[in-house]
Every structure is written in structure tokens, then in C-alpha cells.
Image 1 (cartoon, one colour):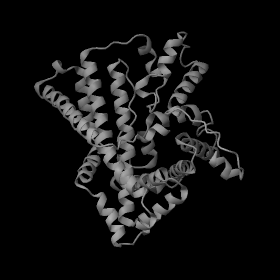
Image 2 (cartoon, helix red, strand yellow):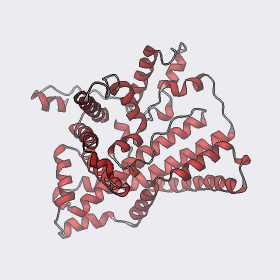
Image 3 (spheres, rainbow, N blue to C red):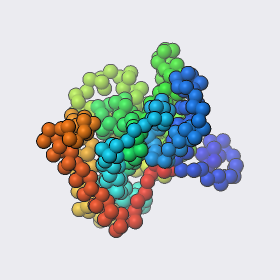
Length: 378
């Protein structure tokens, strides 16, 4: 309502309606089911409880990933489980828990300290620490929950699609969106971009369609101008890459730096409480040459040993190690006892590592009251 009043200069009072957490996720799931049935892509489910199971399945109800009905249609009515599938799901869950509790929380504390600090105490160094910390917080927070949802679903016999594929290893913003929050970008492509005409109605209409999609992507995250501007920002860079061919000819190392820099700056807008704060923070990142004792104290105070260790792990965890990940997944699907000794040793080591991760998470949760989950509000 505040955004509405700002645009139209009105004084409409806030009705004080409290929306349920995760409303955007289960609303999009319900919409995709209705649209797919209308299109004839899936058959209508006549068992009301099965429909409710699909829409309100608790592992991914409040924070995704957005699951299409066609992905789990057969498993809703007929699914199988065994001890090995449950064990694999538990391991995936613990991996996501570690991402959230260990890495995302450590990054979040530093990001919150800097974004909530007085503007005068922020300089170039602290601004970059805050931006990088939030860059990793949002990825490990959300991908960690996606891992937990996928793991819990597998324990119940459901197989959800991957929601992240090493997005910070992308060479362009276009590729970033193929790897980041895949279920959301796929939803907008299937149910908004293509119905609008996609790229089939000429270049001007294609540009308009893409900007509509990214404005809606911003609104999906919340009715705040920072989210809308973040969506427009990404839409403009997508158009820039499409119509400026030199970007597509960047060397791979330069493409990675370019994409990561664009994403990092964009997330500063995303994290900011207001447009003004976001613009000022970006200004500090590229021009905050004030190295007073107060500003340096804020920066140095965030560089604790725990933060630095988690920062190194965060960087390593973003590496696009597709070969190793694919090998582990393929071996896991083969069954532990059907593997050779080397494969069995790898899988057993991963299970042991998962339970050590659980122990570390319990210790951190018991001694730390800071456990925000940023995607609850979307």
C-alpha cells in the first residue's frame, strides 16, 4: 500500500492484512496446475486430497522450489521408497542444513551489520564486505532450503527437479538465470513469456515481453520498489547482452567476472531497505574512499576468523564442479553395494561427512540465536 500511495500520491490507509509465509510459492504451484489442466498438458486430478497434497506438500510449501504437477503426477498416486532412498534424502537434507546454518548465517550476520550501520561509518571496504556477504547469504540460504526440500521429498518418495546449478559460475546474466532459481525462471517462461508471444513477434515485442517478465519477477519477491528496480536491472542487462554482441565474445574468465559483478551489485539493491539506501551503498562500493577509524573499525570487526573460514568455504562451494557432482549422483543412483570399492568408500565418506555436518549445525544452533530465513517473506 505504501508503494501504491507513492506512485499515485494518495493516502490510502494500510488495511493491515497479514499474508501467509511462502504465499508466492504455493500460489504459483496452484496456478500452474490449473493452467496445465486447461491446456490439456496434464489430466485433471479428481481426488481432492491428492490436489491438496500437491499444493500443500510441506517440504517445499513455504520456500520452494516451485514444483509443477506434471513433475510429480505419477508419484502422487504411486511411489516407492526404500532405505537407500531415505538415506540419500537425509544426506541431501543435511547438506542443505549445513549451507543454511553454517555459511548463510555467518554471511548474514556480516551483511546485516553493514547494511544496518550508519551511512557515515561505511566506506569502500565495508561496502564490498557487506555486498559479498549478502551475495553468498542469499545463495546459501535459498539453495540450502532447496536442498532440504529436495531431500525431504526424496525421503517420502518424491523427486523434485534441481533449483540451482552453480549460478555464480555463469559467464553471462542470461546463463545466470538458467542456473539461478530454475523453477521460478521456468515458470515465468512457460506461463508468461511464451503466452505473451516470446520472441516470435519481432524485436520490439520481444524487448517488451522480457521487461514485463522481469518486472513481474521483481514484484514476485515483494511489493517494494527495490525489488522492482532489481528486476528491471536484470532485464536491461539481458537486453544489453542480446543486442551488444561483444559481450558474448568475452573470454570465459572475463565473462565470469562481468556476470558476478552485475549480480553482486544487483543484490545490493535487492537487500536494501529503500532505493536511496541501495543507491548510496552502491556509491560507497565504487567511491567510498573514507578510511577513518570509525569506518575501518566497522569493516575490520566483520572479518572474524569464523567469517573468513565460512567465506572460503562459500567460494569453494560455488565452484562449478559439474563432473564430480554428476559422478556422485550417478554412483548414488546405482546403489551402494553395486559400486566398486572406490565408489563405496566415497559414498560412505559422504554419509559420515553429512552426520559430522549435523553435529556442527547442532552446536551452532545451540549457541547462536541468529537464524533468519530470508525467503520466508517472498
